[in-house]
Image 1 (cartoon, rainbow, N blue to C red):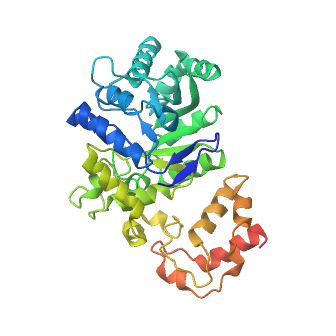
Image 2: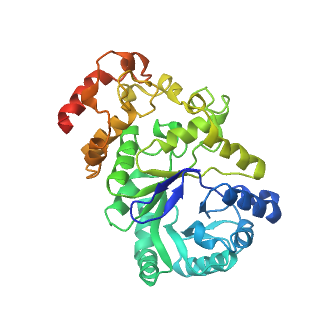
Image 3: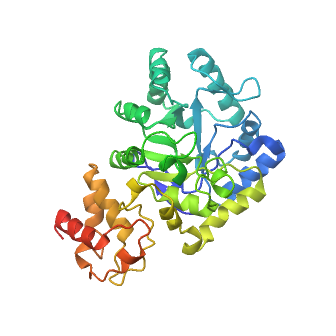
Length: 364
């Protein structure tokens, strides 16, 4: 397993986490064994926005003895007291639901307390008016919540909460379909969504990714909006390459599904190569680097995707991006202008020209 550090903390978060929307379908026993298998394989980040109440007691048993080694993403607004999932903005119901979740999980603290599913500005205003966010901040001051997060599909709402300076983590829907205006949750333009990812990285807000497969639609050419199927590993690699992303949270039903997801760790670069999306992204995306590194290998040894990412992040205001760039052994100024990258780029980025601009920007 590989890990990425939470910018606003010391937590090392596994790049593969676990979603729970489908995990309870095969019962508590299989759920518990799946969670145990996940932990044994280094997964330590678990989103508890489950499809129903089944996973909670199973998790409670599975993490006994290793609670300090796992991180729970608990949602303030997801209600399981009836046994099924429910969404609420009522603070009294939220308090009771969170209390139920903690008891079922056999824990007295929350690693990441999330303002749940804020997709409309009116919902955010209600959460503020009802005191939900204030209540979460009080719990954080008491040590019950370690970090505050937000789950949303809407960039404008996320930006509003980012302006409040309370977030350490964001759960957001990221996949090639949504980023290029396809699907129910494809909210915001491609530029707006990518600007959000860069803002999160610049401000040290980590991103956990939901819907990496677009609800499974991207995995089948019959349902893919592109008329072309992508693999799980291509979708996961795409999400993990976005600025700010710490972990991807695929939904699994059982240990067999989990085994497939874990195969990502040993997959070849060819299996993870998502550059095919360059053939069906919209015209306005042409000429923009998405850090896919399909241009590799560079004869001069440049990590072209990473150089582009540090440049974009620096322009977005990330104070650390310049330092990261300066620590690269091979920099944009080392470009040989051989044209290899320009010929291979599926997004038709003029990387030779861009390397010259980046070298001038960073002064080397």
